[in-house]
Every structure is written in C-alpha cells, then in structure tokens.
Amino acid sequence: MLQQLKSLAIKKLSEKMLSNSLNSEATGAAATQGAGALIASLTEKLGAGNIDQVKDLFSSGGQSMEENGIFQDITGKLGSILQSQGMSAEEATAEAKNTAPDLINGLKEKFESSASEDSAFDISQITNLIGGDAAGMINKVKGLF
Figure 1 (cartoon, rainbow, N blue to C red):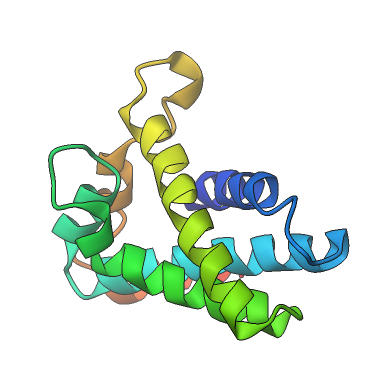
Figure 2 (figure 1 turned 120 degrees about the vertical axis):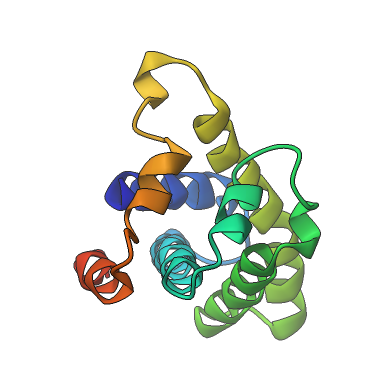
C-alpha cells in the first residue's frame, strides 16, 4: 500500500514540477525525495496515533488541507528539497506551495475513487498498518526509502 502511494506521489510530483527551473535529473530527484518525505510524514503521524490527520488529508469533509499538519509538513519539506536541488529559496517556496496541493488532491482522488484500478488506495489499509504496533509499522516503511 505505501509503496503504491509512494509511486503515485513520485508520478504526481514529477508531472507537476516538469516545467520548473531545474533540469530533469534534479526534478526527478526532488520528486523521489518529496514522495519519501510524504511517506515519512504519514508514518510519523500514524506512529504517534494521529490517524485523524491522515484520514482528513485524504478525504473530503475533514479540516481544510492548508490546516492539516501533514500538508504543512510536506509543503515545507518540498521547499527544502527543491532548494537542495539548486532552486533559490524564494522559487523553491513558491514551487512547493503550488505543487503540494496538486499532489495531495491527486492522491485524495485515488482514495475517494470507486474505480477498481484504484481499489488499493483504501484509507483503512493505511490506518490498519499501525494495528497497535507503531514500531513494526516504521520497520515496514523503512524499505521504501
């Protein structure tokens, strides 16, 4: 489940950041690092028992995306990642603020979809990962990085 989520996040980030000022190699690296940062943020929140933040992020009707701690975290991390790939701080911050909403909305569409090809994107599968064993979940996720 998390590997599928990471792969989709890489794809969404790569598509959204295609026209930025970085070369294709740096953009690809930023997309991969950004997807890893998203998975790390999800893992951290689930491990800390913040299941509602994860559910709110990937479903309609919860708190606004901009108020969600995971969204705020990934936006900040994307800015840092883009800057580390060679963007100016100002440009990286702007790119992250433009990219993060599209990333989350793209993932949210998969979780809310009833299409059979999207059946792997089930919020209950993410929340079932913790099952009272945060340390075990973190060990499962380590292989994604």
